[in-house]
Figure 1: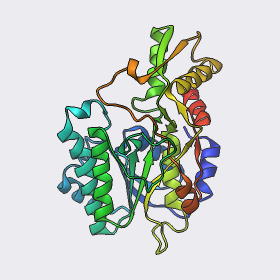
Figure 2: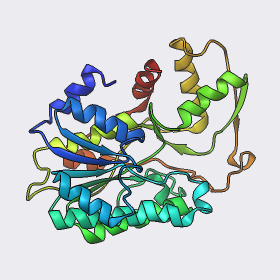
Figure 3: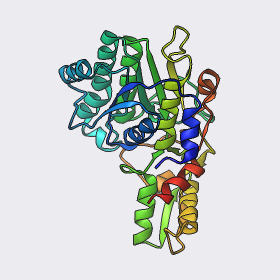
Figure 4: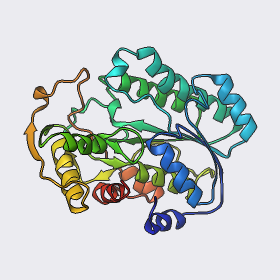
Length: 309
């Protein structure tokens, strides 16, 4: 659950209640949007994929006409990175066609669209943090399908905010934190990749970021700085360093009652169907300049998440 501090961070931007339609409401970020949006007093309509198929334009149209939302937030996505290589049609249907459908409905009803994208639109070869003007070069079906969705939104509807994030973790869904804790119950020693760098980003902080954008004074005003943004989280680490922090905090909180030996390994020793980006760090300067939203601090967010397990 959000802390009082979370509420204060949101409420200092807060202007008035909104009627918000949230897709992907059962996922990591969608579920946090429902929790934190309720704290803000928004009228929320959350739909999972079983309740609303965003690949079906007719369904999206009927739902929007029924609810008449002030805003749509798209937290729905096909995120199975490796599986997408053999389920290309489904990945593109959800990530590209679904985004296109939402953009078209938002355009026809003059509704702002907030959309969550990913670091996988980049190839990960840049030595420094990515900025919004860097040319995307996806090297996976997942990344390419998400990029196609971003491009559809940008081409169709001006009133959009696209937030790119990396290494998402949270209480809901599957993620690295939960995987590490599960493996720790089964083993005493783990080998973790140490040559892929990024920034863990909590679903809670992403939800808070989106709600703070909505609550900003310029949102949906003539001077609103619509467009593409990176949401930064600090500090940057490798997967190995992330695992170290997970186990250290888990032991301090009493969740884990044993030492786990961690061995750093190169990516070549842990082959996957899809090559992971070597660098997933995102620069959030633009977001701070336009919406006064600073970088998230994932270590504090991790502690809060572990405290609720």
